[in-house]
Length: 154
Image (cartoon, rainbow, N blue to C red; front, side):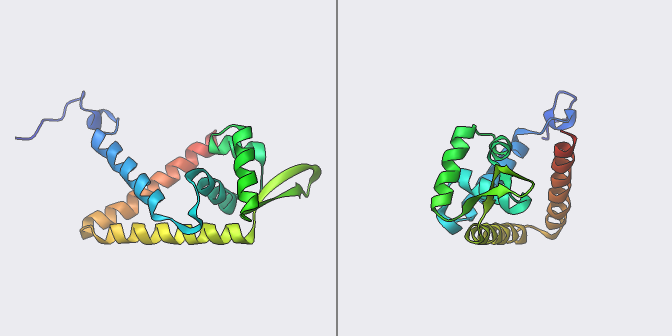
């Protein structure tokens, strides 16, 4: 016997169900663990990915975007700099400002990690039935657009 949906049902009221939240958490965890190139920590991986996507940034902007304190980001950038993944450079528009940018080595690690995640996602999608594959290929880009729209408004 199926439970009848009511307005108190989270899935009906617009609040994601526990099942949906668990699925998202599992997908994020799976994707994080599928990328191993460079042996990076999660924090280093997300920082190098941001630099790879968005280009050089001020340390303060990078820290804010990654949701960490400036001292923590300074330590992380120092470790990544020692590993040859990033470098500090003068801002071409204001020589007093220092930017953090990914090196060629860092960009290569970023590309390898993205390729590993893409392959892992493709394998997951291929395990689904055709209607589910189509739904995922529509839903994931739609969620990405919603995230970009939200970020552009803030």
